[in-house]
Image (cartoon, rainbow, N blue to C red; front, side, top):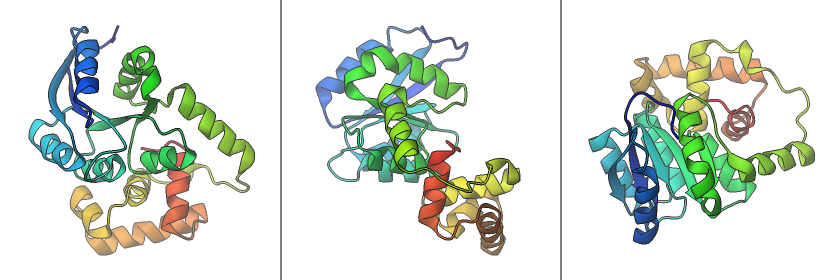
Amino acid sequence: MINQTKQIRILLVDDHTLLRQALCTLLEREENLSVEGEAGSGEAAIVLAEKLQPDIILMDITLPDMDGLEATRQIRCKHGNIKVIALTMHVEEEYLLKFLAAGGSGYLHKSTADLELLRAIERVMAGEIYLGPTGVQVLANRQYVHPVEGDVDPDVLSRRERQVLVLVAGGCTSAEIAKRLFLSPSTVDTYRNRIALKLNLESRSQMVEYVARHHLE
């Protein structure tokens, strides 16, 4: 059962109608969960996110037009208050890291959704990252195979630097970040340079990996 006093508003994004119906049935058994809308494509998800302003989006990665990674990136760049949980058949490291870097907050394999989904929603609403057994194993394997030496603790960053880092890793341009944080593009560029120096990161791809590795959001 979801331990929340407020109503949690959810948008479902998947191109399989039967799966969306099954998820609706599962979610609406909980009195504090409300499915506000459904989308079958990434572009439709972006439109409905703007219109409905849900608390959580359950996002498939493989969609017919724009994939769930890009849809998540665009939604999170514009609506940082909306949390996105991936429900996917992909278990590869590549998809997990890209989804986290795009601003995702949870990553679940569809085969475990009936067991893990409610827990994931509760954790994500509490401000945590929820990966489920599959995601945890992927990151555990990455830590073992690709150890990172000299990694700098994210606590060296100021609050604003951390915000900029997460948005850069999510694919937002300096202009998009400036608009989102009410800064000038030149100020954003200054923050990016400071971040690079503090964390010893030379490229955006390294920032993406850093954000995923430290589960920043």
